[in-house]
Length: 311
Image 1 (cartoon, rainbow, N blue to C red):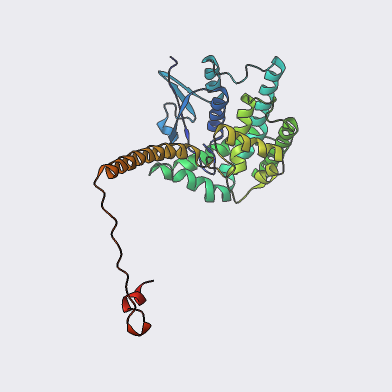
Image 2: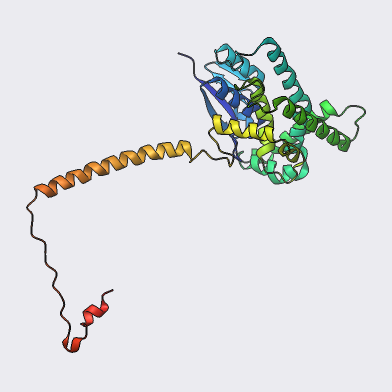
């Protein structure tokens, strides 16, 4: 019997199982490959054994970083790429590198550096889920880490000012989205009708940009001009996470299934009770029905006061 596997990750909102791109990537791959992960929502990354998110725990094995987690799942025979050719495998690595180089900096900037988005959406959302007093510190720490990562990868010459860096990372991100849209075309997934590692990474990066309601939506507006990428995200949410475009389970699927089962049990009990009552009534002595006394009209053809009071 396979050892149980638990994935610790940030929670979700806006119709997403998680707002964290790396967590979404691992969750999507697990769905695609059939890996039986137990997902645990955390409220701060310091509670994970390595201080990182997502983290996979299987017995005494602790793994962080999406690429390492996916490699571990493949070793456990949960492989979403087993039908890919060598060329498709190479293309997968190339596109993942493209995502991390071109799209990730703009994603980090949208969530953690863009002041209006950070102050009105990102910081309140994370702070409301992190216990006090860490809620006063961790969102700011995560924002500084995101800015440092952007400047480290994109802040070299000839880009010296932050405004120049911002303009460049959004140009790169839009170019990356255009390339992904062209590569996907009219296909359901990037390599045909079966989702793979590349689909998991693209979904993890695109879904937060697509779904989260930000006041500054430069990247989101460009993504929504590419309907095949939007359809791609919606299809994965619907088919693999059982979420509709509005972010709810179809007919509240999981909850509805449990409620329907309880309701069925209740109806069965009630039916059995009614049948027993019917049997008891049939066996009990029967009395003739009582006759209702008919009220006579008062003298002069006027109705009785009691009749006038009846509806």
